[in-house]
Length: 179
Image (cartoon, rainbow, N blue to C red):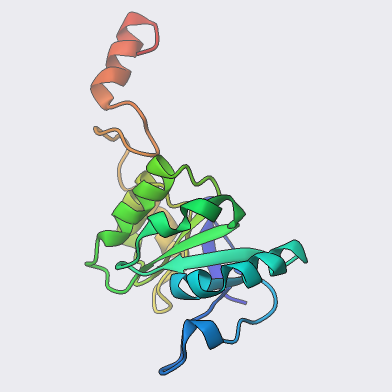
């Protein structure tokens, strides 16, 4: 069974990532039984059918490519146990913005997973924008990747994982109150 990092621990990954075969349409894709992350296009084409599967005990998950608009998930965002965001290349930063939008603007509280070309050097920053699960690139050590969360001991800016910037936290500490 594949492994992922979730809650800063290595755990088994029970989810399958459905990708469309060349020429396969979202309306006719075969969605396996069980825990499946479907592409946004499949969700948009078949959300009524997929919601019925959820009511029959299947977990529901979706994955977004960098070009996908996360706002398309808003009407049903609470139905997803997992939302994954694909990083097709290490250098593609659009997934960071998608994660921040899902957490901050759209209020997603479930598992937010980074998939694709995910490397150790990204983990600290991915966690800052709201990712809490990481499917590491297969040719890299998942054990070594855990150290990526410890790359920095303090952060200056506020973001999803720390709502106050350093100067506000420092001011609150000096005055003995809260900012």
